[in-house]
Image (cartoon, rainbow, N blue to C red; front, side, top):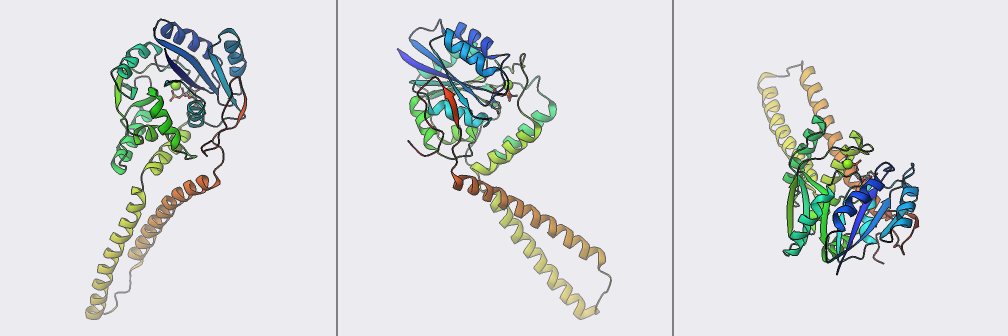
Length: 318
Ligand code: UDP
Ligand code: MG
């Protein structure tokens, strides 16, 4: 019997958790040879999610839950789930049924074939706002160009992984986690399963545009130092241009004397350089912010209560 843990991050999902359990269990109950355990991670929900989880845990012996002391974000919830899982295989999926449970049997085939990971990929972003899709595809373009870690576009956090892969993921102890990059960074053989985007029917999305923007910047700066190189490159290029310009001006002055008006040129140069310097400091700042957060080494999550013998959220290996 292969033990499988299903990790479900939940933030204000009172409307869905029960339906999620019913639908998912309807699918997995018929799979022979596997023993499923659910690990719901309540990410500091302010609604009745936790009491729904109590109810589920009471009614079904294979339901575990972890509840955070506040909202730590989906990354932290996934990490907590992985850290507290012990199954031979681990499935991560959203609570909102946008990751179709019906795909689990097919995805399990990939693992049976010898893949380390079966992961879902959206073939369409239908039902999602245009602007969000456009920014998302821009993010993947920039990120994949800048980083050696190639993240497949449209990959979602719905995957089945072997214990070996999960242990490797847990070895990356960074506090600011960007799972899409981490999954790609650890390597292993992944089989992709395309599916049509499913619109959320219950509850609402927890992402704001600001949240997604921060997520994208973190994603790039966590896996690539190309922006820093870009800054050095820009500095070098501008210095070269400036040097040439100085020589031209010097010669001009020597031959034709001083040409007084230069208001526009001066203003343009000052503004242009000012902009580039600010941008460069900003980019440096992003990296310093990462160093700062990592140096503090705060726990990634804090568990307030749980019905399993849980592990703490510090990034140190324990
Ligand atoms: N989620 C979470 N913590 C958060 C935000 C989201 O655990 O701070 C969970 C949420 O409950 C859901 C999953 O992450 O199970 C995906 O969130 P959502 O559906 O809002 O994102 P979208 O599908 O719009 O990308
Ligand atoms: Mg969703």
